Structures are given as C-alpha cells and as structure tokens.
Amino acid sequence: MSIDTTAEQAQQELLEEFELFDNWMDRYQYIIDLGKQLPDFPDEWKRDEHKIQGCQSNVWMRHRLEEGRLHFDAISDAAIVSGLIAVLLRIYSDRPPAEIRDTQPDFLAALGLDKHLSPTRSNGLHAMLGRIYEVAERAAA
Image (cartoon, rainbow, N blue to C red; front, side):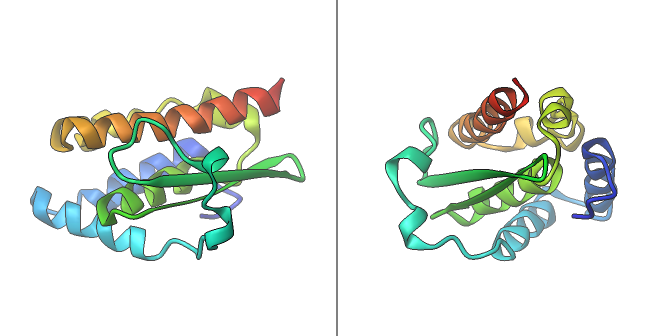
C-alpha cells in the first residue's frame, strides 16, 4: 500500500486486480495468497481485547495512531479470513481516521464478496469492518 494513494484509489486498484481472474475459485485463491503475505502478528498480541467478536474463526486486530494515521495489524487462524483481512488492511490501514470513516466499502458489492462468501464469513467480514470504523470514529473525534 502506498501512502500516496487514497482509500478510494486502493479500492479501484483491488477491483482491477480481481478483473484478471475468470472465476471465483481463482479469486478465492488470490485472496488466500494475499493473506499469506500479512506481516507477523506476535502471539502476545493475541489477547481478548484484540479479538473480533462475530467471526466464526479466530481474528485478532490491533491498531495504533502514528503521525495522524491509523495503522492496523490483524491475523486469523483461517486462510480465507486472513486474505479478507489483507484486503481490508490494504484499503483502510495507514490512513487518516477521517478518511477511513468516510470511505464506504464499495469493493464488497463490486467484487461480489457478499454474494460469494458464506453467511458466517460475511458476518465476520462485517465485524472486522465494524471494528475498523469504530476505531476510526474514536480517533477522528
């Protein structure tokens, strides 16, 4: 993720990458591959206060505010969920809180993620998004 791009531009780049794949099996594999590239998430960060409720798999997310930008770290014990985390971090991490708060997740519908994820995975994705927006709202206040 380049600090020079906006969250909207990051969404557009993501959509263009997904257009390269002809079917959903390839898209799922790409999402899983993105998850494998997540930075390390040390075990000491896997605490209850970082755990996301509403996810079928275990998901931990932590954040810090640095120089006016929110940075998120997250991981899951499920490959596809780690990939979804990578997608969310690419769009929302390292951005000013107000930009995060004001960026709607248009990529969900544009990619068809809501249609192609199981209901439990979709709920987890929305729970992660909810945490990101909640943190951004508090930081922007």
